[in-house]
Image 1 (cartoon, rainbow over the protein chains, first blue to last red):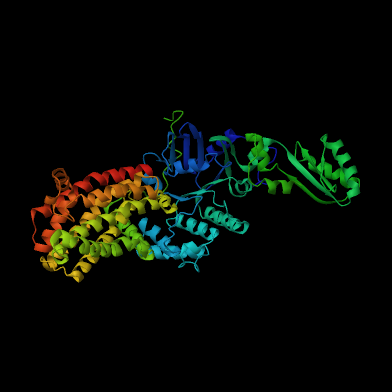
Image 2: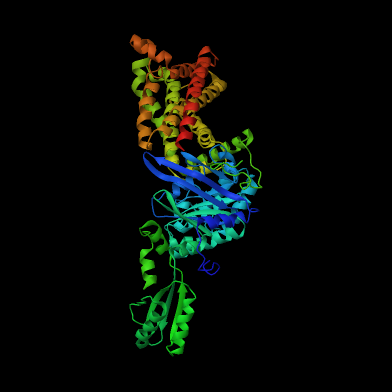
Length: 348
Length: 276
Protein backbone atom coordinates (compact mmCIF):
# COMPACT_ATOMS: atom_id res chain seq x y z
CA UNK A 1 0.00 0.00 0.00
CA UNK A 2 2.70 2.44 1.06
CA UNK A 3 4.94 1.75 -1.91
CA UNK A 4 2.30 2.56 -4.48
CA UNK A 5 1.66 6.15 -3.52
CA UNK A 6 4.45 8.70 -3.88
CA UNK A 7 5.17 9.82 -0.32
CA UNK A 8 5.38 13.46 -1.30
CA UNK A 9 1.85 13.54 -2.69
CA UNK A 10 -0.20 15.55 -0.29
CA UNK A 11 -3.80 14.54 -0.64
CA UNK A 12 -7.09 14.92 1.11
CA UNK A 13 -10.70 14.01 0.56
CA UNK A 14 -11.06 16.41 -2.34
CA UNK A 15 -8.39 14.75 -4.46
CA UNK A 16 -9.92 11.44 -3.53
CA UNK A 17 -13.19 12.69 -4.95
CA UNK A 18 -11.37 13.62 -8.12
CA UNK A 19 -9.87 10.17 -8.29
CA UNK A 20 -13.31 8.67 -8.06
CA UNK A 21 -14.65 10.84 -10.82
CA UNK A 22 -12.04 9.39 -13.16
CA UNK A 23 -13.48 5.91 -12.72
CA UNK A 24 -17.19 6.40 -13.21
CA UNK A 25 -17.48 2.94 -14.73
CA UNK A 26 -17.20 1.47 -11.23
CA UNK A 27 -20.50 1.65 -9.42
CA UNK A 28 -21.08 2.91 -5.92
CA UNK A 29 -21.75 0.26 -3.28
CA UNK A 30 -22.61 2.52 -0.36
CA UNK A 31 -23.47 6.18 -0.43
CA UNK A 32 -24.36 7.97 2.79
CA UNK A 33 -25.11 11.66 3.25
CA UNK A 34 -25.54 13.33 6.61
CA UNK A 35 -26.06 10.00 8.35
CA UNK A 36 -27.09 10.68 11.94
CA UNK A 37 -28.21 8.58 14.89
CA UNK A 38 -29.30 10.00 18.21
CA UNK A 39 -29.47 8.05 21.43
CA UNK A 40 -31.26 10.54 23.65
CA UNK A 41 -29.14 13.66 23.37
CA UNK A 42 -26.03 11.71 22.47
CA UNK A 43 -25.19 11.99 18.78
CA UNK A 44 -23.83 8.47 18.36
CA UNK A 45 -23.38 9.04 14.64
CA UNK A 46 -23.15 12.67 13.65
CA UNK A 47 -23.64 13.85 10.09
CA UNK A 48 -21.41 11.33 8.36
CA UNK A 49 -20.88 11.30 4.58
CA UNK A 50 -19.43 8.19 3.03
CA UNK A 51 -18.93 6.68 -0.39
CA UNK A 52 -17.82 3.09 -0.81
CA UNK A 53 -16.99 1.95 -4.32
CA UNK A 54 -17.82 -1.51 -5.57
CA UNK A 55 -14.94 -3.96 -5.10
CA UNK A 56 -13.01 -2.03 -2.47
CA UNK A 57 -12.34 -2.66 1.18
CA UNK A 58 -13.47 0.36 3.08
CA UNK A 59 -12.25 0.58 6.64
CA UNK A 60 -14.00 2.49 9.40
CA UNK A 61 -11.42 3.17 12.04
CA UNK A 62 -12.09 4.53 15.46
CA UNK A 63 -11.82 3.81 19.17
CA UNK A 64 -14.44 1.98 21.21
CA UNK A 65 -17.71 3.87 21.34
CA UNK A 66 -16.87 6.10 18.37
CA UNK A 67 -20.11 5.10 16.61
CA UNK A 68 -18.68 2.61 14.11
CA UNK A 69 -21.09 -0.22 14.92
CA UNK A 70 -24.07 2.11 15.08
CA UNK A 71 -23.21 3.45 11.64
CA UNK A 72 -22.80 -0.03 10.20
CA UNK A 73 -26.09 -1.18 11.74
CA UNK A 74 -27.90 1.75 10.14
CA UNK A 75 -26.44 0.93 6.73
CA UNK A 76 -27.36 -2.73 7.20
CA UNK A 77 -31.03 -1.81 7.97
CA UNK A 78 -30.66 -3.06 11.54
CA UNK A 79 -31.14 0.38 13.11
CA UNK A 80 -33.46 3.15 11.93
CA UNK A 81 -31.73 6.18 10.40
CA UNK A 82 -32.61 9.31 12.39
CA UNK A 83 -31.60 11.76 9.72
CA UNK A 84 -29.65 11.84 6.51
CA UNK A 85 -29.89 9.29 3.78
CA UNK A 86 -28.11 6.18 2.68
CA UNK A 87 -28.16 4.02 -0.42
CA UNK A 88 -26.76 0.55 -0.97
CA UNK A 89 -26.24 -0.19 -4.65
CA UNK A 90 -28.70 2.59 -5.33
CA UNK A 91 -31.43 1.24 -3.05
CA UNK A 92 -32.65 3.52 -0.32
CA UNK A 93 -31.78 1.93 3.02
CA UNK A 94 -34.76 3.54 4.72
CA UNK A 95 -37.55 2.73 2.26
CA UNK A 96 -36.14 -0.28 0.38
CA UNK A 97 -34.74 -2.27 3.28
CA UNK A 98 -35.88 -5.57 1.85
CA UNK A 99 -33.96 -4.96 -1.38
CA UNK A 100 -30.88 -3.88 0.58
CA UNK A 101 -31.01 -7.02 2.72
CA UNK A 102 -30.84 -9.15 -0.42
CA UNK A 103 -27.51 -7.58 -1.38
CA UNK A 104 -25.67 -7.56 1.92
CA UNK A 105 -24.12 -9.96 4.39
CA UNK A 106 -23.57 -8.87 7.97
CA UNK A 107 -21.09 -10.33 10.41
CA UNK A 108 -21.19 -8.73 13.80
CA UNK A 109 -18.81 -8.46 16.71
CA UNK A 110 -20.50 -11.38 18.38
CA UNK A 111 -21.17 -14.63 16.59
CA UNK A 112 -24.76 -14.70 15.42
CA UNK A 113 -25.32 -18.36 14.84
CA UNK A 114 -27.72 -20.68 16.61
CA UNK A 115 -26.17 -22.37 19.63
CA UNK A 116 -28.73 -25.16 19.53
CA UNK A 117 -27.78 -26.27 16.06
CA UNK A 118 -24.61 -27.79 14.64
CA UNK A 119 -22.46 -25.81 12.20
CA UNK A 120 -23.93 -27.72 9.26
CA UNK A 121 -27.49 -27.20 10.46
CA UNK A 122 -26.85 -23.49 10.91
CA UNK A 123 -25.67 -23.04 7.34
CA UNK A 124 -28.58 -25.13 6.05
CA UNK A 125 -31.02 -23.00 8.06
CA UNK A 126 -29.68 -19.71 6.69
CA UNK A 127 -29.55 -21.14 3.17
CA UNK A 128 -33.16 -22.28 3.35
CA UNK A 129 -34.25 -18.93 4.76
CA UNK A 130 -32.68 -17.25 1.74
CA UNK A 131 -34.57 -19.33 -0.76
CA UNK A 132 -32.17 -22.18 -1.53
CA UNK A 133 -33.57 -25.67 -2.00
CA UNK A 134 -32.79 -28.10 0.79
CA UNK A 135 -30.23 -29.91 -1.37
CA UNK A 136 -28.55 -26.72 -2.55
CA UNK A 137 -28.47 -25.36 1.00
CA UNK A 138 -26.64 -28.50 2.10
CA UNK A 139 -24.13 -28.47 -0.78
CA UNK A 140 -23.31 -24.76 -0.42
CA UNK A 141 -23.11 -25.19 3.35
CA UNK A 142 -20.68 -28.11 3.00
CA UNK A 143 -18.54 -26.13 0.54
CA UNK A 144 -18.36 -23.24 2.96
CA UNK A 145 -17.51 -25.52 5.87
CA UNK A 146 -14.62 -26.92 3.82
CA UNK A 147 -13.51 -23.44 2.77
CA UNK A 148 -13.49 -22.27 6.38
CA UNK A 149 -11.77 -25.39 7.69
CA UNK A 150 -14.80 -26.49 9.68
CA UNK A 151 -15.65 -29.80 8.00
CA UNK A 152 -14.45 -31.85 10.94
CA UNK A 153 -16.51 -29.82 13.37
CA UNK A 154 -19.57 -29.69 11.11
CA UNK A 155 -21.69 -31.99 13.23
CA UNK A 156 -20.49 -30.86 16.64
CA UNK A 157 -22.58 -28.59 18.85
CA UNK A 158 -21.47 -24.97 18.57
CA UNK A 159 -21.07 -24.76 22.32
CA UNK A 160 -17.84 -26.74 21.85
CA UNK A 161 -16.48 -24.28 19.27
CA UNK A 162 -13.54 -21.98 19.98
CA UNK A 163 -13.91 -18.24 19.47
CA UNK A 164 -12.08 -18.41 16.16
CA UNK A 165 -14.25 -21.26 14.90
CA UNK A 166 -17.42 -19.41 15.82
CA UNK A 167 -16.22 -16.31 14.04
CA UNK A 168 -15.41 -18.34 10.92
CA UNK A 169 -18.80 -20.04 10.98
CA UNK A 170 -20.41 -16.66 11.43
CA UNK A 171 -18.64 -15.28 8.38
CA UNK A 172 -19.48 -18.43 6.42
CA UNK A 173 -23.16 -17.90 7.28
CA UNK A 174 -22.93 -14.39 5.80
CA UNK A 175 -21.57 -15.71 2.51
CA UNK A 176 -24.20 -18.31 1.59
CA UNK A 177 -25.79 -16.16 -1.08
CA UNK A 178 -22.50 -14.52 -2.08
CA UNK A 179 -23.67 -11.04 -1.13
CA UNK A 180 -22.27 -8.19 -3.21
CA UNK A 181 -21.51 -6.19 -0.08
CA UNK A 182 -20.27 -7.59 3.20
CA UNK A 183 -20.36 -5.63 6.44
CA UNK A 184 -17.78 -6.85 8.93
CA UNK A 185 -18.08 -5.37 12.38
CA UNK A 186 -14.73 -5.72 14.13
CA UNK A 187 -14.02 -9.07 12.51
CA UNK A 188 -10.93 -9.84 14.57
CA UNK A 189 -11.75 -8.34 17.96
CA UNK A 190 -10.98 -10.94 20.60
CA UNK A 191 -9.18 -13.32 18.24
CA UNK A 192 -5.68 -14.59 18.91
CA UNK A 193 -2.96 -13.61 16.40
CA UNK A 194 -3.20 -16.88 14.48
CA UNK A 195 -6.95 -16.65 14.00
CA UNK A 196 -6.57 -12.98 13.24
CA UNK A 197 -4.19 -13.64 10.38
CA UNK A 198 -6.50 -16.37 9.11
CA UNK A 199 -9.39 -13.91 9.11
CA UNK A 200 -7.29 -11.34 7.24
CA UNK A 201 -6.49 -13.94 4.58
CA UNK A 202 -10.17 -14.81 4.29
CA UNK A 203 -11.09 -11.16 3.85
CA UNK A 204 -8.43 -10.75 1.14
CA UNK A 205 -9.81 -13.83 -0.63
CA UNK A 206 -13.30 -12.34 -0.58
CA UNK A 207 -12.03 -9.15 -2.15
CA UNK A 208 -10.17 -11.13 -4.79
CA UNK A 209 -13.49 -12.79 -5.62
CA UNK A 210 -15.03 -9.39 -6.21
CA UNK A 211 -16.89 -8.70 -2.96
CA UNK A 212 -17.13 -5.20 -1.61
CA UNK A 213 -16.27 -5.04 2.06
CA UNK A 214 -16.97 -2.42 4.65
CA UNK A 215 -15.28 -3.24 7.90
CA UNK A 216 -14.96 -1.51 11.21
CA UNK A 217 -11.90 -1.88 13.34
CA UNK A 218 -10.17 -0.27 16.26
CA UNK A 219 -6.87 -1.75 15.16
CA UNK A 220 -4.77 0.64 13.15
CA UNK A 221 -2.62 -2.09 11.71
CA UNK A 222 -5.74 -3.96 10.59
CA UNK A 223 -7.08 -0.95 8.71
CA UNK A 224 -3.63 -0.41 7.25
CA UNK A 225 -3.29 -4.04 6.18
CA UNK A 226 -6.73 -4.57 4.68
CA UNK A 227 -8.45 -1.36 3.70
CA UNK A 228 -7.95 0.49 0.45
CA UNK A 229 -9.58 3.53 1.97
CA UNK A 230 -10.22 4.46 5.55
CA UNK A 231 -12.62 6.78 7.30
CA UNK A 232 -11.48 7.77 10.76
CA UNK A 233 -14.41 8.16 13.16
CA UNK A 234 -14.23 9.81 16.54
CA UNK A 235 -17.18 10.73 18.79
CA UNK A 236 -19.63 9.99 15.98
CA UNK A 237 -17.97 12.30 13.47
CA UNK A 238 -15.78 11.54 10.51
CA UNK A 239 -12.47 13.26 11.17
CA UNK A 240 -10.60 12.09 8.07
CA UNK A 241 -10.87 9.91 5.02
CA UNK A 242 -8.41 8.60 2.47
CA UNK A 243 -6.05 5.78 1.60
CA UNK A 244 -3.74 4.72 4.43
CA UNK A 245 -0.82 6.49 2.73
CA UNK A 246 -2.89 9.62 2.14
CA UNK A 247 -3.77 9.70 5.80
CA UNK A 248 -0.14 9.23 6.71
CA UNK A 249 1.08 11.97 4.39
CA UNK A 250 -1.47 14.29 5.99
CA UNK A 251 0.70 14.12 9.06
CA UNK A 252 3.65 15.03 6.93
CA UNK A 253 7.04 13.43 6.84
CA UNK A 254 8.93 10.22 6.31
CA UNK A 255 11.16 8.76 8.88
CA UNK A 256 14.65 7.30 8.28
CA UNK A 257 15.91 4.68 10.69
CA UNK A 258 19.52 3.57 10.54
CA UNK A 259 21.21 0.78 12.45
CA UNK A 260 25.00 1.12 12.70
CA UNK A 261 27.42 -1.81 12.43
CA UNK A 262 29.59 -0.34 15.16
CA UNK A 263 28.03 1.36 18.12
CA UNK A 264 31.00 3.69 18.34
CA UNK A 265 30.12 5.13 14.93
CA UNK A 266 26.65 6.28 16.03
CA UNK A 267 27.73 9.67 17.37
CA UNK A 268 29.64 10.53 14.20
CA UNK A 269 26.76 9.36 12.01
CA UNK A 270 24.28 11.43 14.01
CA UNK A 271 26.46 14.50 13.63
CA UNK A 272 26.58 14.03 9.86
CA UNK A 273 22.84 13.44 9.63
CA UNK A 274 22.14 16.56 11.68
CA UNK A 275 24.36 18.64 9.44
CA UNK A 276 22.60 17.33 6.36
CA UNK A 277 18.94 17.38 7.42
CA UNK A 278 18.96 20.24 9.95
CA UNK A 279 16.85 18.01 12.19
CA UNK A 280 18.01 16.50 15.44
CA UNK A 281 17.97 12.71 15.09
CA UNK A 282 16.75 10.50 17.92
CA UNK A 283 19.35 7.99 19.08
CA UNK A 284 17.86 4.56 19.68
CA UNK A 285 17.73 3.33 23.30
CA UNK A 286 20.54 0.84 22.69
CA UNK A 287 22.70 3.53 21.19
CA UNK A 288 23.45 1.45 18.12
CA UNK A 289 21.32 3.48 15.71
CA UNK A 290 19.21 6.56 15.20
CA UNK A 291 16.11 7.81 13.46
CA UNK A 292 15.57 11.13 11.79
CA UNK A 293 12.44 12.67 10.28
CA UNK A 294 12.74 13.90 6.74
CA UNK A 295 10.79 16.59 4.94
CA UNK A 296 11.28 14.64 1.69
CA UNK A 297 11.92 10.92 1.49
CA UNK A 298 14.70 11.51 -1.07
CA UNK A 299 16.84 13.01 1.70
CA UNK A 300 17.34 9.48 2.96
CA UNK A 301 19.65 8.79 0.02
CA UNK A 302 21.73 11.86 0.81
CA UNK A 303 22.24 10.71 4.38
CA UNK A 304 23.22 7.22 3.27
CA UNK A 305 25.70 8.51 0.67
CA UNK A 306 27.44 10.61 3.31
CA UNK A 307 27.68 7.63 5.68
CA UNK A 308 29.12 5.49 2.90
CA UNK A 309 31.72 8.15 1.95
CA UNK A 310 32.80 8.33 5.58
CA UNK A 311 33.11 4.50 5.72
CA UNK A 312 30.54 4.25 8.46
CA UNK A 313 29.01 0.79 8.01
CA UNK A 314 25.32 0.19 8.56
CA UNK A 315 23.51 -3.08 9.16
CA UNK A 316 19.95 -1.99 8.54
CA UNK A 317 18.07 0.96 7.15
CA UNK A 318 14.38 1.74 6.71
CA UNK A 319 12.43 4.67 5.33
CA UNK A 320 8.90 4.61 6.72
CA UNK A 321 5.79 6.68 6.76
CA UNK A 322 4.49 7.73 10.14
CA UNK A 323 2.37 4.96 11.65
CA UNK A 324 -1.44 5.22 11.55
CA UNK A 325 -1.27 5.59 15.29
CA UNK A 326 0.61 8.85 14.84
CA UNK A 327 -1.99 9.83 12.25
CA UNK A 328 -4.84 9.03 14.59
CA UNK A 329 -3.18 11.08 17.30
CA UNK A 330 -2.70 14.00 14.95
CA UNK A 331 -6.33 13.89 13.79
CA UNK A 332 -8.15 13.33 17.05
CA UNK A 333 -5.80 14.68 19.66
CA UNK A 334 -5.83 11.38 21.53
CA UNK A 335 -4.32 8.01 20.96
CA UNK A 336 -6.16 4.98 19.86
CA UNK A 337 -6.48 2.99 23.06
CA UNK A 338 -5.62 -0.29 21.45
CA UNK A 339 -2.36 -1.86 20.50
CA UNK A 340 -0.37 0.87 22.22
CA UNK A 341 2.00 -1.64 23.80
CA UNK A 342 2.67 -3.18 20.38
CA UNK A 343 3.26 0.18 18.77
CA UNK A 344 5.48 1.30 21.61
CA UNK A 345 7.45 -1.88 21.20
CA UNK A 346 7.83 -1.39 17.48
CA UNK A 347 9.07 2.15 18.02
CA UNK A 348 11.92 1.21 20.28
CA UNK B 1 -30.80 17.14 -11.21
CA UNK B 2 -28.34 16.67 -8.40
CA UNK B 3 -29.06 19.09 -5.61
CA UNK B 4 -26.54 19.48 -2.84
CA UNK B 5 -27.95 16.72 -0.66
CA UNK B 6 -29.51 14.26 -3.04
CA UNK B 7 -27.42 11.31 -4.05
CA UNK B 8 -26.59 11.31 -7.76
CA UNK B 9 -28.42 8.28 -9.07
CA UNK B 10 -26.13 8.02 -12.06
CA UNK B 11 -23.24 6.79 -9.96
CA UNK B 12 -25.25 4.59 -7.60
CA UNK B 13 -26.68 2.08 -10.00
CA UNK B 14 -28.36 -0.93 -8.46
CA UNK B 15 -26.19 -4.01 -8.55
CA UNK B 16 -26.67 -6.33 -11.46
CA UNK B 17 -28.29 -8.94 -9.23
CA UNK B 18 -32.07 -8.99 -9.36
CA UNK B 19 -33.84 -8.16 -6.13
CA UNK B 20 -37.45 -8.67 -5.15
CA UNK B 21 -39.52 -5.84 -3.77
CA UNK B 22 -41.20 -8.05 -1.19
CA UNK B 23 -41.39 -11.61 0.11
CA UNK B 24 -43.77 -13.89 -1.77
CA UNK B 25 -46.29 -15.90 0.26
CA UNK B 26 -44.58 -19.09 -0.85
CA UNK B 27 -41.17 -17.89 0.31
CA UNK B 28 -42.68 -16.71 3.59
CA UNK B 29 -44.18 -20.17 4.18
CA UNK B 30 -40.81 -21.83 3.48
CA UNK B 31 -39.18 -19.42 5.93
CA UNK B 32 -41.81 -20.10 8.58
CA UNK B 33 -41.52 -23.87 8.26
CA UNK B 34 -37.71 -23.62 8.28
CA UNK B 35 -37.84 -21.65 11.52
CA UNK B 36 -40.42 -24.10 12.89
CA UNK B 37 -37.89 -26.85 12.16
CA UNK B 38 -35.28 -24.89 14.09
CA UNK B 39 -37.65 -24.61 17.06
CA UNK B 40 -38.44 -28.34 16.96
CA UNK B 41 -34.74 -29.26 16.86
CA UNK B 42 -34.19 -26.93 19.80
CA UNK B 43 -37.08 -28.57 21.65
CA UNK B 44 -35.75 -32.06 21.01
CA UNK B 45 -32.28 -31.08 22.26
CA UNK B 46 -33.62 -29.40 25.37
CA UNK B 47 -36.21 -31.91 26.57
CA UNK B 48 -36.54 -30.04 29.87
CA UNK B 49 -38.50 -27.46 27.90
CA UNK B 50 -41.27 -30.04 27.58
CA UNK B 51 -41.82 -30.40 31.34
CA UNK B 52 -44.76 -28.00 31.26
CA UNK B 53 -46.59 -30.13 28.69
CA UNK B 54 -45.72 -33.54 30.13
CA UNK B 55 -45.25 -33.69 33.90
CA UNK B 56 -47.44 -30.71 34.68
CA UNK B 57 -50.62 -32.13 33.12
CA UNK B 58 -50.00 -35.47 34.86
CA UNK B 59 -49.51 -33.74 38.18
CA UNK B 60 -52.55 -31.49 37.83
CA UNK B 61 -54.86 -34.25 36.61
CA UNK B 62 -53.95 -36.62 39.44
CA UNK B 63 -53.88 -33.89 42.09
CA UNK B 64 -57.09 -32.10 41.15
CA UNK B 65 -58.92 -35.36 40.41
CA UNK B 66 -58.16 -36.83 43.81
CA UNK B 67 -58.47 -33.60 45.83
CA UNK B 68 -61.55 -31.90 44.35
CA UNK B 69 -63.38 -34.91 42.92
CA UNK B 70 -65.23 -35.75 46.12
CA UNK B 71 -66.06 -32.18 47.00
CA UNK B 72 -67.23 -31.01 43.56
CA UNK B 73 -68.88 -34.09 42.04
CA UNK B 74 -69.16 -36.63 44.85
CA UNK B 75 -66.37 -38.84 43.51
CA UNK B 76 -63.24 -38.69 41.38
CA UNK B 77 -64.83 -40.79 38.62
CA UNK B 78 -67.83 -38.44 38.38
CA UNK B 79 -65.56 -35.39 38.36
CA UNK B 80 -63.32 -36.54 35.48
CA UNK B 81 -65.69 -35.56 32.60
CA UNK B 82 -65.76 -32.05 34.09
CA UNK B 83 -62.10 -31.94 35.07
CA UNK B 84 -60.28 -33.39 32.02
CA UNK B 85 -61.47 -30.72 29.52
CA UNK B 86 -60.69 -28.11 32.20
CA UNK B 87 -57.14 -29.43 32.67
CA UNK B 88 -56.62 -29.60 28.90
CA UNK B 89 -57.59 -25.94 28.59
CA UNK B 90 -55.42 -24.96 31.56
CA UNK B 91 -52.27 -26.85 30.51
CA UNK B 92 -52.61 -25.51 26.97
CA UNK B 93 -52.71 -21.95 28.29
CA UNK B 94 -49.82 -22.65 30.66
CA UNK B 95 -47.86 -24.03 27.70
CA UNK B 96 -48.48 -20.75 25.84
CA UNK B 97 -46.54 -18.74 28.40
CA UNK B 98 -43.34 -20.43 27.25
CA UNK B 99 -43.82 -18.92 23.77
CA UNK B 100 -43.27 -15.41 25.13
CA UNK B 101 -40.36 -16.41 27.33
CA UNK B 102 -38.67 -18.28 24.47
CA UNK B 103 -39.10 -15.33 22.14
CA UNK B 104 -37.62 -12.95 24.69
CA UNK B 105 -34.61 -15.24 25.15
CA UNK B 106 -34.24 -15.64 21.39
CA UNK B 107 -34.41 -11.91 20.76
CA UNK B 108 -31.49 -11.38 23.12
CA UNK B 109 -29.39 -13.86 21.19
CA UNK B 110 -27.07 -13.08 18.29
CA UNK B 111 -28.91 -15.36 15.91
CA UNK B 112 -31.92 -13.04 15.93
CA UNK B 113 -29.65 -10.24 14.74
CA UNK B 114 -28.90 -12.38 11.74
CA UNK B 115 -32.58 -13.08 11.09
CA UNK B 116 -33.10 -9.32 11.05
CA UNK B 117 -30.35 -8.83 8.50
CA UNK B 118 -31.79 -11.44 6.12
CA UNK B 119 -34.31 -10.69 3.39
CA UNK B 120 -37.03 -12.76 5.04
CA UNK B 121 -40.63 -12.04 6.02
CA UNK B 122 -40.61 -9.96 9.19
CA UNK B 123 -43.19 -12.26 10.76
CA UNK B 124 -41.24 -15.48 10.10
CA UNK B 125 -39.12 -15.46 13.28
CA UNK B 126 -42.38 -15.08 15.25
CA UNK B 127 -44.53 -17.45 13.25
CA UNK B 128 -41.96 -20.26 12.95
CA UNK B 129 -41.75 -21.05 16.67
CA UNK B 130 -45.53 -20.59 16.91
CA UNK B 131 -45.92 -23.36 14.36
CA UNK B 132 -43.55 -25.65 16.28
CA UNK B 133 -45.48 -24.95 19.48
CA UNK B 134 -48.56 -26.60 17.97
CA UNK B 135 -46.78 -29.85 18.82
CA UNK B 136 -46.50 -28.76 22.45
CA UNK B 137 -50.23 -28.08 22.75
CA UNK B 138 -51.03 -31.43 21.15
CA UNK B 139 -48.68 -33.15 23.60
CA UNK B 140 -50.29 -31.34 26.55
CA UNK B 141 -53.80 -32.36 25.49
CA UNK B 142 -52.81 -35.97 24.73
CA UNK B 143 -50.95 -36.47 28.01
CA UNK B 144 -53.92 -35.10 29.99
CA UNK B 145 -56.32 -37.36 28.14
CA UNK B 146 -54.13 -40.42 28.65
CA UNK B 147 -53.85 -39.80 32.39
CA UNK B 148 -57.61 -39.21 32.51
CA UNK B 149 -58.34 -42.50 30.77
CA UNK B 150 -55.97 -44.31 33.14
CA UNK B 151 -57.87 -42.74 36.08
CA UNK B 152 -61.16 -43.95 34.67
CA UNK B 153 -62.30 -41.19 32.27
CA UNK B 154 -64.42 -42.63 29.46
CA UNK B 155 -65.13 -39.81 26.98
CA UNK B 156 -68.66 -40.15 25.61
CA UNK B 157 -67.79 -38.27 22.42
CA UNK B 158 -65.80 -41.21 21.06
CA UNK B 159 -62.65 -41.01 19.01
CA UNK B 160 -63.95 -38.26 16.77
CA UNK B 161 -65.16 -36.11 19.63
CA UNK B 162 -61.86 -36.51 21.46
CA UNK B 163 -59.85 -35.76 18.29
CA UNK B 164 -61.95 -32.65 17.69
CA UNK B 165 -61.27 -31.66 21.32
CA UNK B 166 -57.51 -31.96 20.82
CA UNK B 167 -57.71 -29.88 17.64
CA UNK B 168 -59.68 -27.20 19.49
CA UNK B 169 -57.11 -27.22 22.29
CA UNK B 170 -54.31 -26.73 19.77
CA UNK B 171 -56.18 -23.86 18.10
CA UNK B 172 -56.77 -22.29 21.51
CA UNK B 173 -53.12 -22.61 22.46
CA UNK B 174 -51.99 -21.01 19.20
CA UNK B 175 -54.41 -18.07 19.58
CA UNK B 176 -53.78 -17.34 23.25
CA UNK B 177 -50.01 -17.63 22.73
CA UNK B 178 -50.05 -14.35 20.78
CA UNK B 179 -50.87 -12.55 24.05
CA UNK B 180 -47.72 -13.90 25.66
CA UNK B 181 -45.72 -13.37 22.49
CA UNK B 182 -46.74 -9.73 22.61
CA UNK B 183 -45.60 -9.53 26.24
CA UNK B 184 -42.36 -11.20 25.13
CA UNK B 185 -41.71 -8.39 22.65
CA UNK B 186 -42.48 -5.74 25.29
CA UNK B 187 -40.70 -7.01 28.39
CA UNK B 188 -37.08 -6.32 29.19
CA UNK B 189 -36.13 -9.82 30.30
CA UNK B 190 -37.32 -13.41 30.20
CA UNK B 191 -37.98 -13.20 33.94
CA UNK B 192 -40.24 -10.21 33.44
CA UNK B 193 -42.17 -12.09 30.76
CA UNK B 194 -42.66 -14.95 33.18
CA UNK B 195 -43.96 -12.68 35.92
CA UNK B 196 -46.31 -10.69 33.72
CA UNK B 197 -47.55 -13.78 31.94
CA UNK B 198 -48.44 -15.50 35.21
CA UNK B 199 -50.60 -12.50 36.13
CA UNK B 200 -52.55 -13.02 32.92
CA UNK B 201 -52.44 -16.80 32.76
CA UNK B 202 -53.83 -17.52 36.24
CA UNK B 203 -56.98 -15.38 36.04
CA UNK B 204 -57.53 -16.60 32.50
CA UNK B 205 -57.32 -20.26 33.53
CA UNK B 206 -58.94 -20.12 36.96
CA UNK B 207 -61.63 -17.42 36.58
CA UNK B 208 -63.45 -19.82 34.32
CA UNK B 209 -65.64 -22.89 34.53
CA UNK B 210 -62.57 -25.15 34.20
CA UNK B 211 -62.66 -26.69 37.65
CA UNK B 212 -65.90 -25.73 39.42
CA UNK B 213 -69.56 -25.32 38.37
CA UNK B 214 -70.16 -21.66 37.61
CA UNK B 215 -73.43 -21.50 39.60
CA UNK B 216 -71.44 -22.11 42.80
CA UNK B 217 -69.72 -18.74 42.33
CA UNK B 218 -70.87 -15.26 43.48
CA UNK B 219 -72.85 -13.37 40.85
CA UNK B 220 -70.12 -10.93 39.77
CA UNK B 221 -67.64 -13.76 39.38
CA UNK B 222 -70.16 -15.65 37.27
CA UNK B 223 -70.26 -12.63 34.97
CA UNK B 224 -66.47 -12.62 34.73
CA UNK B 225 -66.27 -16.32 33.90
CA UNK B 226 -68.93 -15.92 31.20
CA UNK B 227 -66.91 -13.34 29.24
CA UNK B 228 -63.67 -15.29 29.68
CA UNK B 229 -63.05 -17.01 26.33
CA UNK B 230 -61.44 -19.89 28.23
CA UNK B 231 -64.86 -20.76 29.71
CA UNK B 232 -66.26 -21.18 26.24
CA UNK B 233 -63.28 -23.31 25.24
CA UNK B 234 -63.81 -25.51 28.30
CA UNK B 235 -67.56 -25.83 27.58
CA UNK B 236 -66.82 -26.60 23.94
CA UNK B 237 -64.24 -29.23 24.94
CA UNK B 238 -66.81 -30.86 27.25
CA UNK B 239 -69.47 -30.82 24.51
CA UNK B 240 -67.07 -32.35 22.00
CA UNK B 241 -65.34 -34.90 24.19
CA UNK B 242 -68.18 -35.95 26.44
CA UNK B 243 -71.10 -35.61 24.02
CA UNK B 244 -69.50 -35.63 20.60
CA UNK B 245 -71.70 -32.64 19.85
CA UNK B 246 -70.79 -29.65 17.71
CA UNK B 247 -72.62 -27.09 19.85
CA UNK B 248 -72.88 -23.32 19.81
CA UNK B 249 -70.18 -23.32 22.52
CA UNK B 250 -67.72 -24.62 19.93
CA UNK B 251 -68.62 -21.65 17.76
CA UNK B 252 -68.19 -19.22 20.67
CA UNK B 253 -64.85 -20.82 21.57
CA UNK B 254 -63.57 -20.43 18.01
CA UNK B 255 -64.92 -16.88 17.91
CA UNK B 256 -63.12 -16.10 21.17
CA UNK B 257 -59.85 -17.53 19.84
CA UNK B 258 -60.20 -15.60 16.59
CA UNK B 259 -60.84 -12.38 18.52
CA UNK B 260 -57.77 -12.84 20.72
CA UNK B 261 -55.66 -13.62 17.65
CA UNK B 262 -57.08 -10.65 15.71
CA UNK B 263 -56.13 -8.29 18.53
CA UNK B 264 -52.76 -9.68 19.53
CA UNK B 265 -51.20 -10.74 16.21
CA UNK B 266 -50.97 -7.12 14.98
CA UNK B 267 -49.84 -5.94 18.42
CA UNK B 268 -47.13 -8.59 18.64
CA UNK B 269 -45.91 -8.12 15.07
CA UNK B 270 -45.79 -4.34 15.38
CA UNK B 271 -44.03 -4.42 18.71
CA UNK B 272 -41.60 -7.03 17.39
CA UNK B 273 -40.76 -5.01 14.28
CA UNK B 274 -40.15 -1.94 16.41
CA UNK B 275 -37.99 -3.79 18.86
CA UNK B 276 -35.81 -5.53 16.32
